[in-house]
Length: 200
Image (cartoon, rainbow, N blue to C red):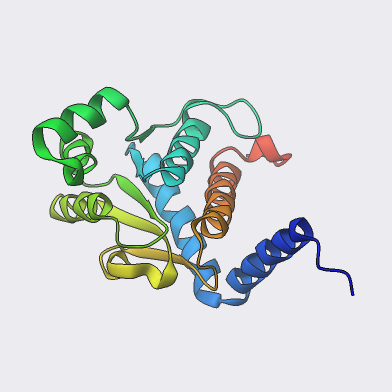
């Protein structure tokens, strides 16, 4: 009997994780709510803010640059920022502690009508929790891209999107980036229909 190819097994595990997300009705509902919240924020002149640690920080940066740059076709720049500037992060961590690295930036830039996208594969990252606490104090709506049941953050965010089944950060992040891309596409289709072959 031949041992299963580990590369194929990893792809199949990733596909199984995505299927579990699609089969959980709250997942797609959350993505729809995320898209609606992002579109409403941008239409009202608000700011999309995002934060995460490690690979989730990379996802938060990817999310922000798709708005200020372009996704499918040229259109005007849209207001988005990822809390990922090393000088900001190290300054805040040095002066106030690592748990405050995102919260201070929410405090500095966030206002009612903005949207915070908080990304945590565990749902329990202390610095993401603090960012959400400050966002709630300031009347900022929060989307949580989460894993492993959602952790403490599930109850703290307005729109929890929890990846089911997966227990490792890589599988969870693979679904998170799909969610981010699909939300951007959904908002672009609404705001710039001509980019998708439709008449505005």
